[in-house]
Amino acid sequence: MPHTKESPTMKRIAITGVKQTTLLDVPIPHPIQDWVLVKVHAIPLCTEYKNWLNGSEYHGHEAAGEVVMVAQPGKVNVGDRVVVMAGAPCGKCALCISGEYIHCQHMHDPAEFTGVAYGGDTHVQYLLKQDWLLVPIPDGISYTRAALACCGLGPTFGALENMNVSATDTVLITGGGAVGLGGVINAKFRGARTILVEQVPYRQQKAHELGADLVLSPHDPDIRSKIMAYTDMRGVDACLETSGNVVAQRLCIDMVRRRGKVSLVGECGNDLAIQASNDFIRKGISLMGQWHYNLNGAHKLMQVIRDSPVAEQLITHVFPINEIQQAFATCASQECGKVMILPWEGVDQ
Image (cartoon, rainbow, N blue to C red; front, side):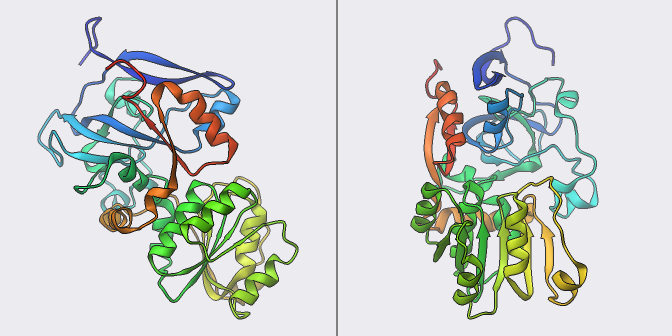
């Protein structure tokens, strides 16, 4: 449906330069086919602060809100409270059907499909999303807490599921940003012992508050011997690498026990030196990548969000949308957990 001068408008966050943002007034998009209109009530920030630091445009991939308009009958109804999953997969391939939609090889271009340049953005008051990519929010869970089902808790939940981590395991987590701290929450919910490696004091303290059993600095010269001593010289059962750092990746491979499992969650474009014989064949370890989680397990993640006594503590800062500058600066400071934006606060409604 074409937009006219009389079309109602909404606020959209725009990065306009290095450490510069503004709020734009843009037309509210219209639902089309199975793409429904969601009124956004919580916007978790992820790595967009890096775009803010260098002045490049990026408009988010996490949100929670309410379905307010549909173009046709489908999987959701007006009034449903939902968490918005990332991406715009085809919904038809084997990966999508199996729940592994994040790896779809036939992603839509939301702008081309919806006819709106910002149709798939989440740094907005209203967005469009395929109905099957909307996860129901159980009663009694707030929008901000439910939004942890995106990157706050999602990737490490998926990794622990794939590694079959249980209460008998010890998990090494490298990196104490929001994703790594989410890994502590997920691992402790399963009853596992957790070791977190992080250099920022704020994050170290936060990890303790969330229940990490042992917190170490990556600069500790005795880090390897301390990890081995903590595990009775066996090594850890599973590793979550969330920092995207080659040194941390190497630490995980070295510290995991024989027949253990390592999941790489943190994005990294640098080369990692590995030896097939010493690192894999002789130790028998499994190394896997984890981008998100299988959509069929979303209800299990919602159980973590609902029942974990510390899940909401991952959210350390909540800003109205007109304080987006301070929100990005807080993310860049590294002295935070998950930062949330409330798109209807701080502006005229």
